[in-house]
Structures are given as structure tokens and as C-alpha cells.
Length: 274
Ligand code: HEM
Ligand code: HEM
Image 1 (cartoon, protein in one colour):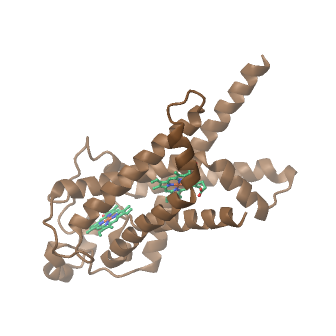
Image 2 (image 1 turned 60 degrees about the horizontal axis):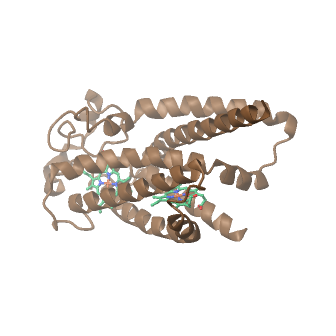
């Protein structure tokens, strides 16, 4: 039981850490790079916690008896690992803090960094949704909702998730990044209008206010031409905002996944009764 709480705590830390990485200007580039690298370390710990599952299902991967959900989960986990490796690898080549000056900047890696970050968020949404039963069981031990209040509480929660998820999608750069392989990002170099790189908090990439908001002193002194990133330091309000934006998107995706699974299960049960 203790191990389950440790797992859940690590999951929560990883999730919040991940959301905070979606805006360099909110947390500063130094924080972004260090936490990004730490997140990779946390993923290895996460995999170590689930090592038995990995070994057991890798051995039986081609067996016909494996349920579809488990197979889907396995494919998702592999895609997640590949995405994380690409994000960290491309991040290292762009690094202007931990690995400053070690690599030449390559535009393709930048686009890959943005695309796979958004893609990983989508995958983690589905991944978390598939573990809904585990999360519900754990929280059920702490928060006891009376049976009568269950339906209204669920309805309110669903409303909040839908509204906040839509708000997150509208305000963030998630859609632009995930669509970047087919719809090119506007601007030059990294795909951002000059002076707005590192503004992934996403309050509209090409809005005028955003361009005005950029600190032009940093632009001139920017490390290897980087604007608005390393110069920016950790801003708690902006960090909370970015965690809320990307967190609400992830929770929306997780809820859609968990909801679909429940519906599919109910249909199967109905068919079995008929
Ligand atoms: C923010 C990131 C992530 C969150 C919130 C998350 C969440 C979860 C949760 C809730 C579980 C079930 C409980 C547990 O064992 O902790 C789980 C299991 C698992 N996760 Fe993650 N995870 C994340 C990232 C990853 C990544 C990047 C990978 C792969 C490289 C991964 C691979 C796995 C595996 C193999 C399992 C056990 C098998 C399974 O049931 O799928 N997770 N994860
Ligand atoms: C899972 C880990 C990571 C995720 C999800 C992630 C995600 C992102 C995102 C979404 C941006 C754009 C942010 C914005 O526009 O404000 C960004 C920018 C950046 N990231 Fe990461 N990152 C991760 C890890 C890293 C690591 C480990 C490094 C370096 C060691 C790194 C270096 C950078 C740099 C240098 C930029 C600015 C690029 C530019 O000039 O526009 N990232 N990252």
C-alpha cells in the first residue's frame, strides 16, 4: 500500500513538473532545462516502480490472451518513451544553460521539441485515463463521498473539467504545436514571431500585446539570440497559470479516455446480458 502512495506521489510530481515546462517565460530557461532533465530521471524511477509489469507483458506481448486495453497501454508506453527521448534529445541540442554552446542550433529539432511535447501531453492524458481505476481507488481512500451526493458531485466535476479543458485549449499553444507537422508555425527560425520565442504559455502567439510584452534588453543581450527565455526568471503566478492551462488539457483528455472506457465496458455488459 505504501508503494502505491509513493507511485501516486511520483505521478503527481511528474505531471506538475511536465505542465510547468510548457512556458519558458513563466519559469525561466534554467528551471526549464534542469526540471526537464529531472523529469527524465523521474520517468526512469516511474518505470522502475512498474518494472514487474513491463517484464511480464513484454514476455507475453504476442500472446493472444492479452486484453486489448493492456496492449493499447503497452503501445502508449512505448510511444511515450520515444517521445520523451526525442524531447530530451532535442532539448539538449537547443540548450542555452546546462549544455550551453555544446551543439549547433537546428530548426528541425526545435519543431520536434515543440511537437513531441504536445504529443506527449496527449499520450499522458490517455495514459492517465487508462489508470483511472487506480487513481479513483487511491483517492477514494482519502475522500469519502456519500452515495447520495455522488451523482451531483460527478456532474459538477465533469462541467468543471470540460470548461477548464476548453479554456486550456483556447489559451495555450497546444493545438498549434500538435498541428505543427501539417500546419507550419508562423514566423521565422523556431517558428515563432520575432521576440516571442519562449512564450509558450500561449496567450496567442501573434497577439500584439505579446510582442510588446517582450523585454527588448534581453533581446539584445540574449544568449545565442534567445529572446525572452533565459532572461526570464521564475514567476510563480505565471507558473501556476501554465500548470493550470496544460493540466486542464491533460485532465480533459484523461476524462474522455476514462469515460470512453466506461461506456465500452457498459455496452459489452449489456450485450452479454442480451
Ligand atoms: C507525467 C507523466 C506520467 C504520469 C502522470 C503517469 C501516470 C501513470 C499512472 C497513474 C500509472 C499507474 C500507477 C503507477 O504505476 O504509478 C502509470 C503506470 C505506468 N506508466 Fe506512467 N505516467 C507518466 C509518464 C510515463 C512515461 C513517460 C512512461 C514511459 C516511458 C510511463 C510508463 C508507465 C508504465 C510502463 C506503467 C505501468 C504499466 C501500465 O499500467 O501502463 N509513464 N503511469
Ligand atoms: C519533458 C521535458 C521537456 C518538455 C515537455 C519541454 C517542452 C518545451 C516547450 C513546450 C518549449 C516551448 C516553450 C515556450 O514557447 O515557452 C520548450 C522550449 C525549450 N526547451 Fe524544452 N522541454 C523539455 C525538456 C528540455 C530540456 C531537457 C532542455 C535542455 C536541456 C530543453 C531546452 C529547451 C530550450 C532551449 C527551449 C527554448 C527553445 C527556443 O529557443 O525557442 N527542454 N521546451
